[in-house]
Length: 230
Image (cartoon, rainbow, N blue to C red):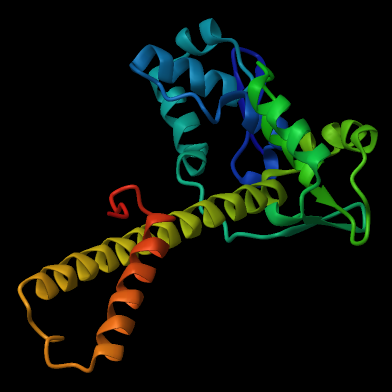
């Protein structure tokens, strides 16, 4: 922490992520200042100061403060799927292994007006190896995750963001493959209608060709609303 004396007051400023807990981070990470006034309010909140106190401070002090906390606006953490707390390791449960109870609790958290959703969700999805999910246990662990320094908590959040980005890339690639397959089917059917390619084939090969074309169309209809079976 960086200590600054101002008007006979000692101000402690966070100058690294180790000085900020996840609970602190949750108070302001979703807030994007719309103007200078809101930016001052955000800086005061980060430093746990009163806004009026900061407004009455010399402009030079504000510059010192914003330089000290500048790291906050450029978070850069490697994704991590586990965290060590009190000598114990807690692992993020993969989405395909979550129980119905976990999904219900997560949806309730997301739909609530809670200001501590991140720590509450981490308490649901992070468990020790071999541990089964328990709602009461998750409720007790909310404060544990809320009190984590951001150096431990933000890599977990980065893991979720990485997975989201990875899923979006897969979905985009999948959509491109389906679109190309649809175009291939369309071009092939046009080719057949114009008589190209199959007229000289034996009857059994023509039948098989038609069957395979219909089969491809049927499979594509399951994945693309743009393809229909005629």
